[in-house]
Amino acid sequence: MQGPEFPPTASSHVASSGRSNYFLSSNPTFEARGNLSPVPRVQKTHWSKPILNYVKFNLDGYWSPGTRKGSIDIMSRNSSGEWCGGLASPLLCDSSLSAEAASALCALHLAKNRGCLRVIMETDCKVLIDCIFGFRVITPEPSFLLLTKFTLWFQASKR
Image 1 (tube, helix red, strand yellow):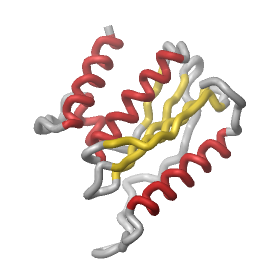
Image 2: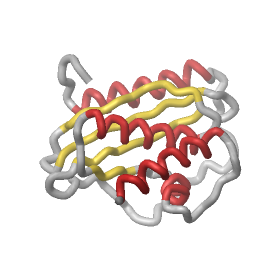
Image 3: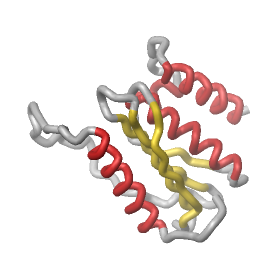
């Protein structure tokens, strides 16, 4: 991650804007259908700083159903809440889960390349979390390979 530093809000805005523009341009006939009533949340959450000497990576994966188009967004901050870097990138994927798994793997590589030894990974994908901890087994598909690689890395780092 060489080059000029961008403020976190600008990076976040660019990532969100790029993701939105990407999906709008790739699927111009998008229409919302079905039950659009709001889904109740289990609890209200907000971002919190990681504990001392840790770096928190917030990651997300997106996928446009019916296509192989997706993207990943990764942002990291230290225990002081300072911006440590991030990434937004388009991605070829087959499912939402494979996009989420790719964002997790990419975040791990980013953490390793930056020399982060104490890392917290934060995602909103419960299926990904369940797969990593072995609570859920998925059928062989492209995301299975990503999850297997991620799980092996995760287990090796716990030793």
